[in-house]
Image 1 (cartoon, helix red, strand yellow):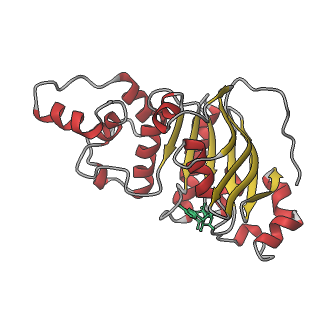
Image 2 (image 1 turned 180 degrees about the vertical axis):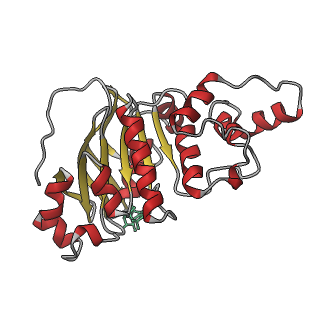
Length: 263
Ligand SMILES: Nc1ncnc2c1ncn2[C@@H]1O[C@H](COP(=O)(O)OP(=O)(O)OP(=O)(O)O)[C@@H](O)[C@H]1O
């Protein structure tokens, strides 16, 4: 495994050390050391069942794990999921996260309210309708959806709906953004458009991003670094260029040239 991880503490981003998840006798993640620095897009890939979702669940606190998780230099592994979120660990979900009958703006507002959807609905039908929260406006501008605030979420193209999901994750404190299969359902040009937007967000001072996806061309083209999981273990960490020719990575993908592989 090639890696250039340093042992000095970082002031931002995500770092896991020795992250291990067991489901009975099955070790779904084994000693995972992974780092995402601010300003980086880092890919996490691996064949079906390799342990990618388990890793996300462990980092976000939805699955018990051994080892440490640091966010922006602070240990968060003893925290419950909502506290990790408050510290700036944000994620998007694979599917079904938007409320189709609400506007784009309302969908993002939901993420800013402690009461979630219930509070927003009360605001809509009660007298507490407020001006647009500047954080919401900024998040929508960041993802390129300024001007779409009053459209219904269901009327947007799928790629735009995914960007609403990103805006929701970005609103409030965001030290690290976990993108869980953002390209699912997108065609290759929509995926690349999404990737370009993510690159711009990160390069413009956005958070570090951990991108988990089956779309290899997306991951290899947009990521600064790539980690590859197989049977719960990291078999590779390095640049996308190194991943394309690494024998263990190629073997994990059955020898198919990686540009053409759909994990
Ligand atoms: N809640 C659970 N209880 C028991 N075993 C589980 C549980 N969740 C996942 N596993 C097992 O852990 C291993 C890793 O699964 P995981 O879903 O994390 O892989 P993945 O890389 O995300 O797969 P996919 O690409 O298909 O989503 C698999 O062997 C799976 O069967």
